[in-house]
Length: 192
Image (cartoon, rainbow, N blue to C red; front, side):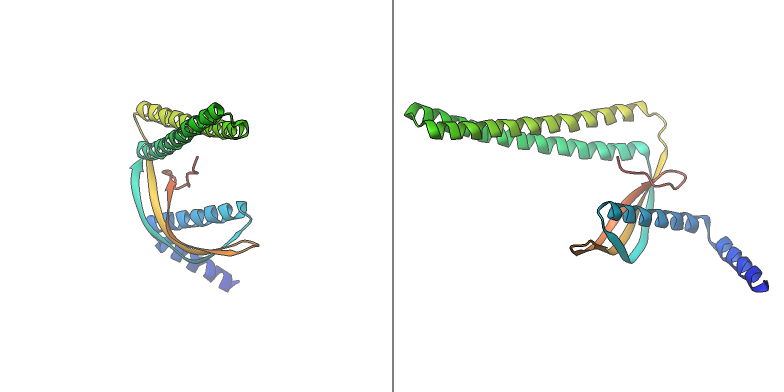
C-alpha cells in the first residue's frame, strides 16, 4: 500500500514538473499519432512508428488557414481547366479527321473518329465541371474570409515521422515532415 501511495506521489510530482508547453506538446503528439493510426485503419493497414518527433509550432489565424485551402482549390481548378483545354484540342483534331474521313467516304473511320470526338468532348466537359466545382469552393472560402473580422488563432504544427505502413499485400515506408492544425484548446482540426 505504501508503494502505491509513493508511486502516485512520484507520478504527480513528475507530471507537475512538466511545463504547460510540454504537456500541450505531449497532448498534440498523442492526437497526431492517433490521427495517423486512424487514417491507416481506413486503408486496412497498421502503422509502426520508428521515430516520431515534434518539430515546431507556429500560431496563425484561421483566415491564413482558409487562404491556404482556397489556394489549393484554385490550383485544382486551374489544373482541371488546363486538362479540359487539352481535351478540346484533341477534340478539334479529331473533328478535322472526322470531316476528312466523311469527305473521302470512309464511313467506318468516320464513325470511329466520331466516337473519339465524343469521348474527348465528354472528358472536356467533366474537366470543366470539376474546375467549376473547385472555383466555387474557392469563392465560398473567399467570402468566408471577408466575413470573418475576428479570426481565431490556430496552431500550425509539424512533426517528423518515420514509420512503416503494413498492409496485407506489402509494407511501405514513410519518412516525412507532416503538418497538422490545432485549435486554441489543442484539439486537432480535421481536414475538410
